[in-house]
Image (cartoon, rainbow, N blue to C red; front, side, top):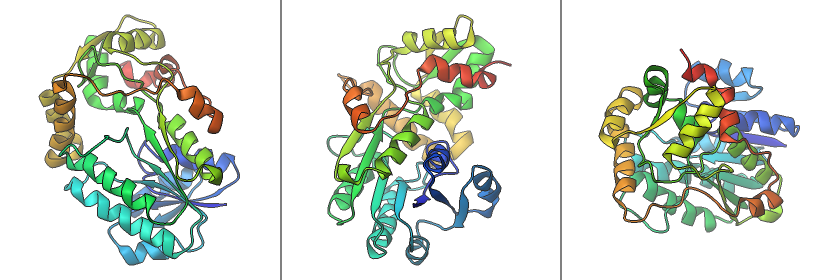
Length: 298
């Protein structure tokens, strides 16, 4: 099987390469920069140069492909552009008779539009995907454990022995490892009978801030506390990594979360039902911390 992966240069989809290779697939990974070729080749993929904004290029690179693993780029200068990028890929997939598209939504989808472009474009994409005529599966991950590998978290762990994240302490989250999400994506590619279905995937534990700190304490072998980072501080730190406009968009999302009278669910209590259809070996968060220990210890 020939699988074309979008977003494989980033942590969200990088592991799709390895998971697909494990099933014997021939993996092609799209990137807009030749600078990423060596990283993709090192993971076992065949790099393909292409920008999602280029309709003709999307048609060219999806020819002869059996399945597409789709991701809308998160850090777009104008997040509303994400829908057009997704459309360009979906249209190309349809035209070239690709047999399956699996979309990693980068988060649980909102029940309705929130006025946040980064989230609203996903609902437009879902509607377009439903009506495009191509078999598809949607994988909705909770919140990535890899979000905790950015300097806004790791610096606090190193310097103050606090795991910092821009959510209130009493908001529970089922953090999920990106490798596990990639495994779900690849399982879905090989299950055409699941076409038209969406799956909420989360980590095995629904952790409030102090619960997350306990898992870090186990993983690192020393006492770690939780720090509910104010979204403004988070946005300031994130802007250094992804630019001002993208950072403020993400900051706005976390401000919205904190202001809600009832926190949105970031965990699937019925994960076992998903695992029966898409069997994946889940990574407990303390094991994930242990694997990434070097990020958190000086």
